[in-house]
Image (cartoon, rainbow, N blue to C red; front, side, top):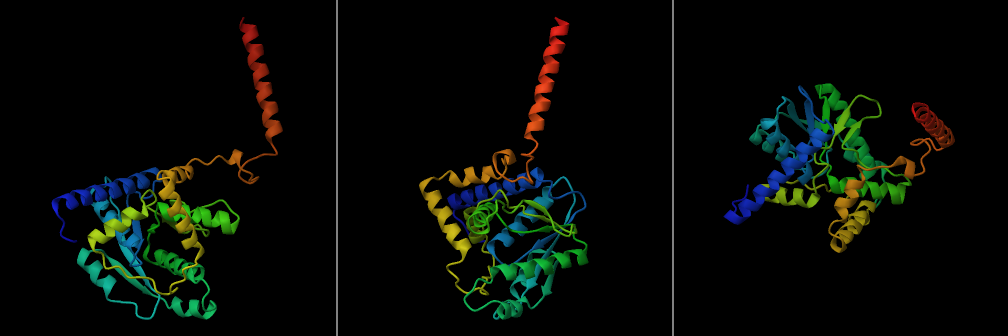
Amino acid sequence: MQDLLPKARKEFNKLQKRLRREMGQAIADFNMIQEGDKVMVCLSGGKDSFTLLHILMALQKSAPIQFELVAVNLDQKQPGFPEEVLPAYLEKVGVPFHILEKDTYSIVKEKITEGKTTCGLCSRLRRGNLYGFAEKIGATKIALGHHKDDMLETLFLNLFFGGSLKSMPPKLLSDDKKNIVIRPLAYSREKDILAFAEQMDFPIIPCNLCGSQENLQRQVIKGMLADWEKQYPARIETMANALQKVAPSQLADTSAFDFAGLEEERARAMADRIQLVNALATEA
């Protein structure tokens, strides 16, 4: 970690405490980690996953329950990927780890036309390999480094480009019901994670698979949210709070709310009121 002046050290300590508090609250709110869990921390080499692992390690020491951590990196065989960086770091901090080697890079480059977005296929291949490996090593939870900003960006991506109202849940049961995915950084802001990673001087490995791809839809959404935050500093937090205050009856999804049964509900309510009035009249 970088040497800090007293004032900077004080600010860093406040930042670290905030990240720990937010992660602890998210874990408690969504019952993410339980006694005896084996948590597989997916480590990509980016700021988010490094921060995820570091804070989880800190919480592991003070948590009232016992749980195991194991770091897993998927080496996708990208040209120039520094294979030695993550093993050296993980050995240094003393975390059990696995390096899973799967050449998904070649598959992505073969399937995706040059210049097109590679993120979708890349993430699906990565997810499939990690899910399978979690079963193999007996992991009971898979921890990912997505944060509050990721969740909001995904909400608007689905709204604007996917025609659906959904985001990244802090806790998820996979479609095949075999894996539980958790996002312990769900309450944390990307700007805090970036500041923390810079102060910790993590050995960040950039993802060069997609090249620049400046026009990715997610980058457009990220820019939109950044502009909103400049104009209205509290807007991000307000929108994040909305993810936890969903009112299905105020939307239009017939699978989420029984609109067809409202007449029956009204009839039951009226019958209950009549019954209550009659009971009160009898008592009088």
